[in-house]
Image 1: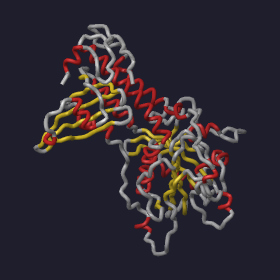
Image 2: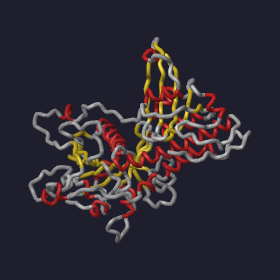
Image 3: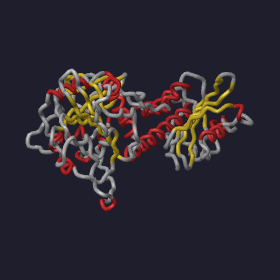
Image 4: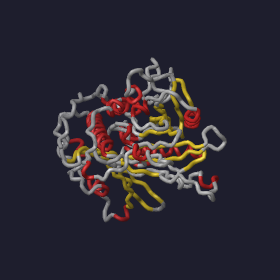
Length: 459
């Protein structure tokens, strides 16, 4: 894979206009346009109906004797369900049953934080090269002593993933050169040499690339499902908020006025009021969460699809479905390429001193399971324990959905483009630091690359 011809840098210039901000602008542009990117047309999932024995339809189930499940699988599958038992036996102790027993832990991308934790502000070395198969590579090396033993901490970034390892030097027959170090973390590396990064601001660029996957802002849909509602038009057509739904929204977060709101707005209009006047927001352990509440988004008379509402909720990745009464939710009720997981909450004893919430979770088949696990039976008392559980489940659900095929492909494209930009900025600025132009040979497989830089690291 050949790199583009480097941009010419005039000898003596310390900074090519705009080059040091390119990476930051690219990340900001990608993040700010995420909703537009999400709205691109993606092909529907492939499924051949002949391959399945259909599950019963929601109308078939509603014709049977209640109680009904919170969630029904679509007739032709494609989703998994967690939390199907909501029966309390007479011997159950509510205080024991209704507090989650599993360990509540927010999922985080630990690899993305390694450079800031172990390299930034400490002595280390950065290198870059081009591999014909792996593409652009950016490599960080740090010598450290752990206990009484010498180690090498190595981080290699490729377009597909970041490799990280800590290797005791005592395990090596001799101290390796940089190419050998890279092969210790990724055997597929096939280059002649790496080139040293000589740009003083390089660490700032590298940490920005590593942390582009970390977000402290989340947006989730909240859909109100009344008794007997089984189609998308009915769900998005609800305007009234019952006392039970109002109670749940107050439990969920704080009601905020959108006009001039200064926090994370989740794509809602805070200037002209085009997305309603209020919403629900919460700061959960320094993570800002904005909800797209179906009943608070603008209602358009005569529009059966309520596109103003669907435009926001249909482009969320995870949504809560609130049920006041016992009617099953089916994930394919809502046509969306992006909604991949739903947390369905059904209330019991609303607006009383003994409010209970039954919970079921469903997600598309290619979304891996995410914690914390629901208790058995999946029933919670209204209170801080359930609040903590619900937010953790929502955020972990979004992280899990990013591993689904559609979002994994999108992240792969984003990562590849950002890595190419990082590589070019490290190369151009390192050349400029040495007073060299950028018109030397391409760095295919670590070859060529200008005499000065290659002579600095030939071993």
